[in-house]
Amino acid sequence: MLQFYSIVCRVATILKTRYTAPGFWNTGLGLFLEAEHLVSEPSERKHLQSCIAEAQEQLRYVQNEFEGVGSGRNSTSGGFLFDGHLTVDPEPPEPDWLVQSGLMTAIATLSAGGSSQTENLDTSESNTNLIQELLQRLDNVVPMILDNDPVAPRVPPASKEVVAKLPVTTITEEILTKLGPDAECAICKENLVVSDKMQELPCKHTFHPPCLKPWLDDHNSCPICRHELQTDDHAYESWKEREKEAEEERKGAANAVRGGEYMYV
Image 1: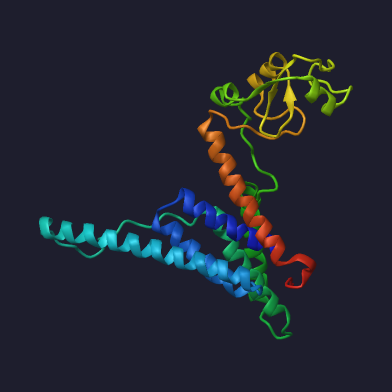
Image 2: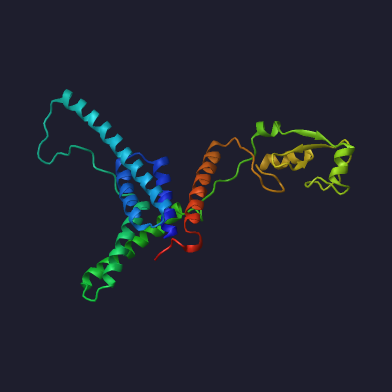
């Protein structure tokens, strides 16, 4: 159930960031409504209710916009609709990443049927076939939804502007005494001496500037702790923001069921 809730949270994020078509939001609304009945933890239910409200608001906005456009057309065209004509464009097909809703419905129906000895066998067989079909479809789309197997973009080098602004300090007797006699540059492994120039990263690790530059020309992180610096790649920075948001959602879902007190089968 935790995995299902995580997927629903990810679907909500994808809807908000990538889709505006009413067909997607209408299907998403159905998923949120069904998921609300399946969760038992109050924080999960509250989050799903906010997703439901946002989906309803989006659909109302699209409907009002469509009605405004439609009234404008009717006032200028003066045409007629004949039998068989469509008054609106057909909705886009149900996105594959939302078939989880249908899967959960089928599982719930099949589980209810399994508890009755008199359940019609044809219905059970039909539900089983539906679940198998949906699982086959999910095999193709779940890797795009689950964050435990993301396709990360290639990490670009650190921003040249950020690197240029990194502070440089000069090693003094006082600093060297505080660091100890074995203090060294982690890249070249040379022991530090008085008057050495050291460039400091935001994580407070320091390196010789000539040693650090080639590294930051190819990487965006500290050679020791991997703390990341900002890059000039907008696509990569946007991906990091999305991953950060998804990680917060995963932590919230994990905290909601920590210890298993709210989990059920």
